[in-house]
Amino acid sequence: MKHWITRLRNDPERAVHALMDAHGGLVYYTVRRVLAGYPEDDIEECVSDTFFYVYRNRDRLDLEDDAIKAYLGKTALHRAIDHKRKVARIPTPTEDALFDADASAQSAEELAVSELTRGELIESILALGDPDATILIAKYFIGMKGKEIAALLHMKENTVVSRASRALKQLRNTLKGAES
Image (tube, rainbow, N blue to C red):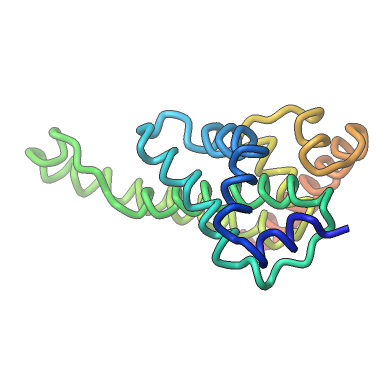
């Protein structure tokens, strides 16, 4: 049964509003966990972007009705991470760095190294594929519990825990290989 997909294709505006009513809380919760500490405007914009993304890609969706919730959660997660990456690329000067050239050069260098490391880490995690990448991002970047991730991905909690453990080992091996 593809109730949501049919609705999105036949009457997209109403369907998106219905999705917002039915699953807006999940999307907001997911985005808020990733963008904790960001302005409320950024969070609301990211939530809107998530539903707009679904609206824009409605013709490409081929999901069963019970998978729409997981799809929205995953889309929200990825949209929020993308927003965080976009904001991280925009340097925010500190008052001390503006007046102290040495401190400015040092902090810029440290920022570049940390951004490179963070970018490599995220790329390595995403290279693990789904659902492992989603599990690691949800657990370590968003701070979700195993039970919450299991509910989001429609898995058993012990499956999520074992997949996270194996994915971490694989990630360590990948990152060790990159250092050599």
